[in-house]
Length: 202
Image (cartoon, rainbow, N blue to C red; front, side, top):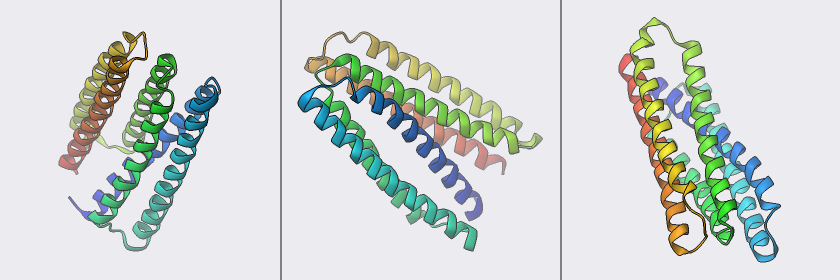
């Protein structure tokens, strides 16, 4: 794969992640209002962490865009750096879930909103790929659609598990975290499959 095409994939991935976290933040801003006292304070702090991590991630993305514009190439270490920055967003989201652990309905809604944000950002990126694609992408589209269908099925399974959680005890918290991990893992696998499909037809 050429460095230019690799750079394009990195930028598409970063666009998805920024859309995802913006949608998640919007949902968390509404959810945090329902929390009280110490849980509200911790959840507010987690949201501040998410915003700071998102802003740092965006700054690196902007630097990447200007590097690509200047040189039409990108190094793998830039992507590694972006992934590390994204990990901060993930950790801050986990902090929010921990702060709201006493209210299963808030945690469930946050996880559901996050999964929906992931789905929408993936869908948005796929639409952009489709809009610029030529007939040579037909096979890639079939594979991408199949991957998205698998993601939707896995997300529904995880959401069903989360829907069974009725109390916020330790077992429920583990189930919620497990469901979020399943959704995130499915999302990452799907993104990888889509990237691989596109790379094969370039």
